[in-house]
Length: 535
Image (cartoon, rainbow, N blue to C red; front, side, top):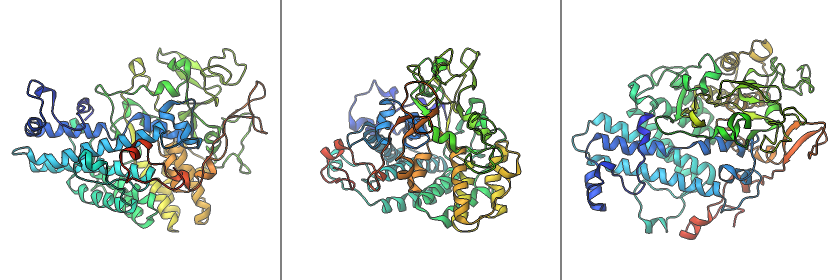
């Protein structure tokens, strides 16, 4: 599957390079392209290539309280997070155009595959189902960010694109769920694909995405049912938690039984984003995508308590000791060590006045918060260009969706806790009963525990920005300053407790819960209208 992503096809016409010697006319290419099954697979590969990218995967972290991007990187996400953006913002524009490019590619496959003569019916159904899944995923992203959006399943003309109105979000969500219910029947499970097809969309991925769509809608009973199809049965795929959390984010650990859907790289398709989040002495570039102090503070202690809870044992003067084991696998802090690309062990020093000062907060180009991400660090990447697959849905996410749904239904007990939160924490190497055993309590008391667990487990996987919006807490967590490490010296803007203030953010409810329709799109189509609060 990785190798097939080398083939990037034109959005408006599908024809391969082997036809370049032929007359380049629309009539000829449409008739000639769909010659055999490989043409259909090549066209589908272009849909996969357009399903998502590393800029969204990593950049979305800075749309939440987990991360911060210094400057205008990642298409201006810092402006969005800071509430100082408008309909011309680059991140907003790119989301709209990128998703509709993918939707068009999927429609081309779905509507043209019947032109392939004598094609194996099982393969045809599978290809159509994969394209329908990717289209459904693209519409899900669009409705999540923009609400009501233009909706079509045909190949609309340029003239039609200039007049089409927006369809209500609820109508599109109903379509997405119907698609995911139907198409799963023509998809293999994760253990039925041949090795050359590893990474393709599976029946399990369709079920998991359906659960996620319903999660965002608060359809708790339906979320529970979908998750149970993956948790309580192997008929829809064989999924489990891998033994080592860190191995999930290494090339050597790819294609494991925890990843349900991932963003495929390798075979020529790579990303160099790690140069933006690693220490500058490792990546030889400015560190612009960095963790926040608020994220660091939310990691629990080994005894299961939050740092502000009585009996946690937290010491502000020794803040990184006895913390959630995933913390040091995810974030680099003052005193952390990392093996660089030259196989040398570096000690990362971030406090002002450190010697050497290369990675400290008072050094130009270093992390402005005093922290660095190391999750997804690919030390095997030549010239920093990584071919590491990026997980989009993991079995751990399914377990946490299940725990959240059961809790919202008022039924979270020790048995459900043990197969969800406890299993995830045991895998993370917690041993204290305070962290692993069911704490008991009401639905309201258990809710923040599950939400905190989602944050720690799924951090830097592009999920938190969506969680804070569906929980309707974005106005609380994004209306506070982005903070960095606590410092006692240096000319820093600090809060009353001595923590660096990097940036002040603003999030208006309800305005910022939906992005504006991009100015460029409204200039082309006067029927699009605009979301509330935007002009």
